[in-house]
Amino acid sequence: MRTRKLAVGGGFEFTPDIHSDHRGLFFSPLQDEAFVAAVGHRFPVAQTNHSRSAKGVLRGLHFTATPPGQVKYVYCARGKALDAVVDIRVGSPTFGQWDLVTLDSESCRAVYIPDGLAHAFLALEDDTVMSYLVSSAYRAELEHAIDPFDPAIGLPWPHDVEFRLSGRDTSAPSLAEAEAQGVLPKYAGCLPAGPTAEPAVCPDQSGVALRD
Image (cartoon, rainbow, N blue to C red; front, top):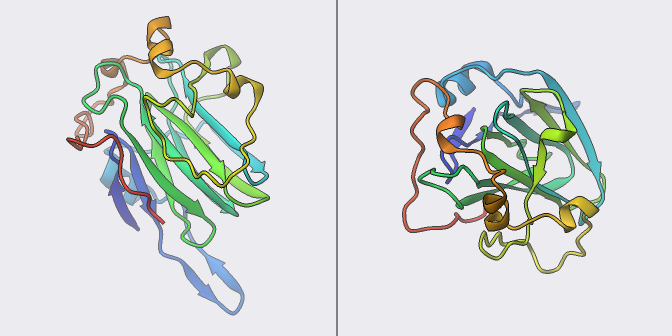
């Protein structure tokens, strides 16, 4: 399994080896040894989630209040999606920075999203299926959203898409508004114990080139 640090501290992209023959293919999206080597601890699975989206569906930017917070491990089981993570941890050296990863059923990439990062994805094909492993159960009162089109964040969504958003995401506050409301997580409260406490800082950039 190949690993890449994201442009936001603590986030990782994982690309597994794919084994294919005349019957089809097999791969392992989450591998404990590779995950622990990159992140420094095991992934604490509490719940698995599954979504199916039509082309143009944009879900996010979403995050869970900290504490308790929530970490995610996301991959695309069918179709194709543009996955985005944004550092919204107040006080983080990479606050406001983002990274994008193309997730699809051919590359079989996965993204690890630590506590304090906002997450979104855009379905690029009909019937795009996303699978999530998460570290805590869903509690509606702890869930928050940020405007995925906030120009201060500047996510480079494609222009040739007819976007479909929920009412919640359409009316979500900007990053600055969410900070003023006091709902953003604090950097110190999101850090895990161990060697991954210090983020990988990417100076002089607000994001990185699309991976595909």
